[in-house]
Each structure stands twice: as C-alpha cells, then as structure tokens.
Length: 115
Image 1 (tube, rainbow, N blue to C red):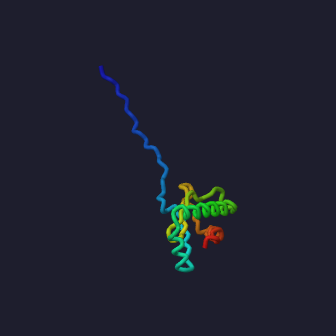
Image 2: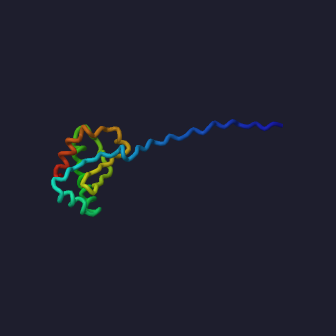
Image 3: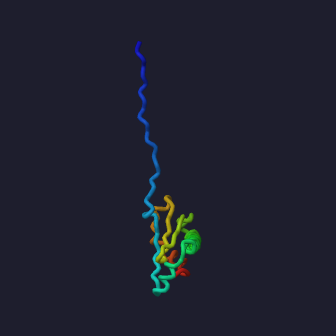
C-alpha cells in the first residue's frame, strides 16, 4: 500500500515595509554664528538645554506646517540640536517622499527666533 503525500506549496515570504535610512529622512537647518562667542554659547549648553530648544522648535515647525493647506499631518517626529547649533528634524517613514525644499521658507520663518 502506497502512502499519498501531499505536495506543499512553497511558503510565500511576507512583505516587510521598507525602512528608509535615518539620514534620508533628516532635514537639517544650519544657523551661522554671528560671532565666535555665540558659537561658544551653543557648545557650552548641556544636553537638556539643547533638547528644550529642540522640542520648542519641533512644536513650532510642525504647527506652522500643519497650518499650511498642503500638509495634513505633522511631518517631523524627532528633532535634535547639535553642538554647533544646527537643528536636525527627522521625519517619519511615511513622510519620506515629500520634498521639504518647497517648505523651507515656512521653516525658516518659524525658526527666525532661534537665529
């Protein structure tokens, strides 16, 4: 007596959403120091002071962009301030195909208080 064996279908691989590298999801805003003392001031700030500035910038920029008629959801998820005073915004994975150069005037006007 022969045993019937069922042929198994090959397992279909599950689709994993593409995770874009963090560097491709970053928008950097550079602020040239007006004087050497201003550059030294940014370097002297500790992490907590820089993060307070970053959180305020994140809130203001997201609000300004959402108030714009083209943007429906806040595009930036995380922000940090570097030692030299630059602000780096990180977008979510769903926002990676948006060209933020079109919105740079809005971002620049919003961050004018910073420098």
